[in-house]
Length: 155
Image 1 (tube, rainbow, N blue to C red):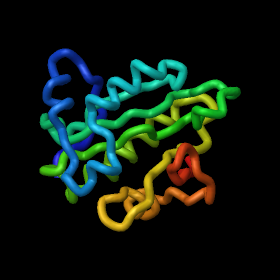
Image 2: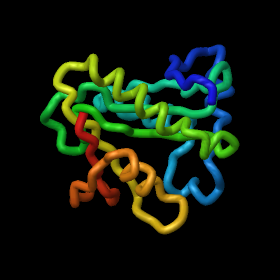
Image 3: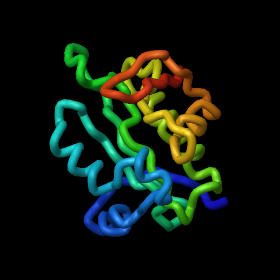
Image 4: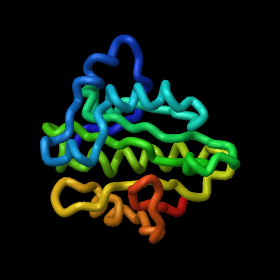
């Protein structure tokens, strides 16, 4: 497997990153990259930060977090929240998602007060990322946020 890295989204790679897609059965659970960019613009108070996920020199996914959200707004989970993780359908099953989360954990290790990473998922039978996150050490908090189940990963 090629080395997996997180790289900035730039003018040079934006089109290739935006073209990445999950499988049709996953579309109900994972927003597109274009929708993620729109969400980042729409909710600057969520402190969005995003990267392209590369395997070697090939963009294979997209990752977006809320990065250090100040307390006080109950509509935004944080301070560190995994907002989006998308691995292109043609590149799934190769460990890229796991490696991207490992790189994200390394990054969060440099961030002030980063003791946990939260995320939220729509539970479901086929296509939901719930099982993926639980296998990687996320814990179900037993709470919901805006119709999604909240998970936490101790850092």
